[in-house]
Length: 459
Ligand SMILES: [Zn+2]
Image 1 (tube, protein in one colour):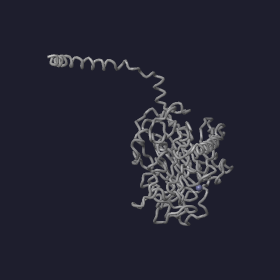
Image 2 (image 1 turned 135 degrees about the vertical axis):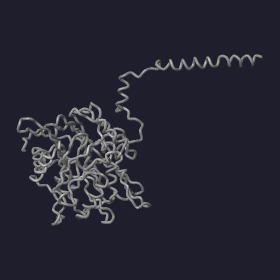
Image 3 (image 1 turned 120 degrees about the vertical axis):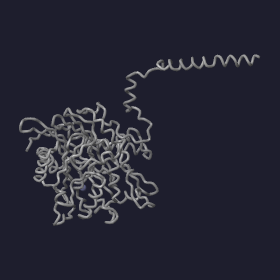
Image 4 (image 1 turned 90 degrees about the horizontal axis):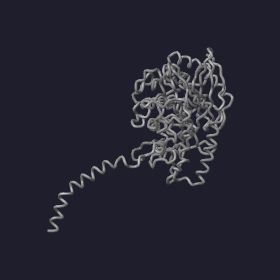
């Protein structure tokens, strides 16, 4: 009896108890301790304690936060989409295309310009990227840790310092390079939009190497500049419109390591000629470029400061209408400089000169040759006038490891890697050494821009 009545009691009261529990559960929601607003802000900042993500931290300050020292508003929302949809800009045509930005009709546009240094391929870089079964190479892992930074660019530029004509022309390293064509796929994967080829290794496989390299890069939807298969291609203006802003692009090299340009193809590689470059700047302006980037392969190898030839040429081109000089070739990082240009009507314009971005990827080690720098620059257009905004230099390091005698490479944003101690193979002593070199490279990068050089517009 006792048992039965207990059962009856349970049957009668259980639904009521459940209801009470449910109501209690709902009503207790708001009573949970709310996150104080300031604590919530700390969490979203995330700088103090990085999330336990397995992905490498792309950049402790991705530049989207207003505390970036930026003079620009936040980047357009459209930029962030590129990480979720790699290759979303594949359909952007070579010139005049517009990416899928939300329509803005107040005459104000913001875009991000990104560039990295020399992309080299020494022979020791090959075996670790080779898939013997498939007979193909895959270099994506080299770029994986910096991909989230490179993808932030509406234009992301790199100097490819080797033909990528592939096996048919013979793979080789220094002194005459020729890399697997798959390097092109890796550059696309990494987030580059634009590859310049005007450098001293452009002719390492002759005009055939140039043709095969351009064919591969263009098939991948990458914009190219600095080498050409025809006079028409060399003369063609490159204006790439992204996020409502048109960038005019030029690229030249000091020479081709003594390999002469074919007599019947003097246009194969664009060589530095100050007056010719100034003319090209004028042509781009007349054709509607909002700002102009001139990539220069110049300077002396392993010199950590620009020489007079570099500073004179770069400043003259800024005075003549270039907005950004993107320098490469010394295989070490050199500083960047800001310029203030006074126009004939008294108005002023800003210029940015990056003397050398060092080695982005290579097998070179020591004396800072294993360091490079990615630049991230805000470009702002308002009522037809385009200006350079924030300039952020993100030093990189080629992290080389050896697995069973085979080298593996990864370009890492070294400031973040040191802060998070994310490179498992490095000892405390290794970290201390890398930290000291990182400090040295950073100091060098930042050593010239505090006092902008004053220039008079020359045209
Ligand atoms: Zn070079």
